[in-house]
Length: 191
Ligand code: ZN
Ligand code: ZN
Image (tube, rainbow, N blue to C red):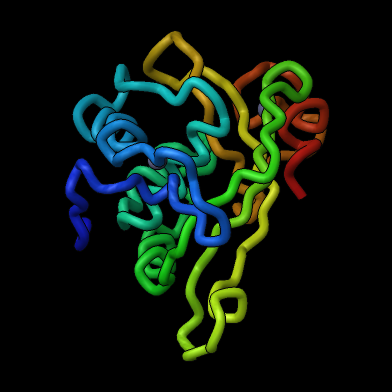
């Protein structure tokens, strides 16, 4: 499905920051590739992102490398069926990605959440003269939840997508499967 297959020794997309030099950036092989491959080789037992930042980085790289399946599978399972894979894919393809900067990683927020604030850079199509004009940033504060999936007993991080329509009420059990009420759990981070 992917159109662009990077050489594994090439710098990982998530290691590129167009506005400041990254010290000894990791190659794709050393960075996001093992996470991407694990999802395709073994959906259930594959390599898991240890932190929300790690997951966020691998999701950014998956956008750059046009791996919509990875984007879907790393979203909270209850939201996966509601994602529009075609639009995820076309957005990934249409964007001329320029790099990533992690602004802030809050690894623990309450019992099971984490947040990553980042800038995802992309090139604009016009021929602006200097770099600052040409490169634009998509600023986002993403929330992640650590939960067990249906198949395995060990917990992994998932992205909580605030754009997916939620059909549960505040008093119903949370969509992440924590057993808590939605409003006391992921509801606090969604709409
Ligand atoms: Zn990476
Ligand atoms: Zn929850």
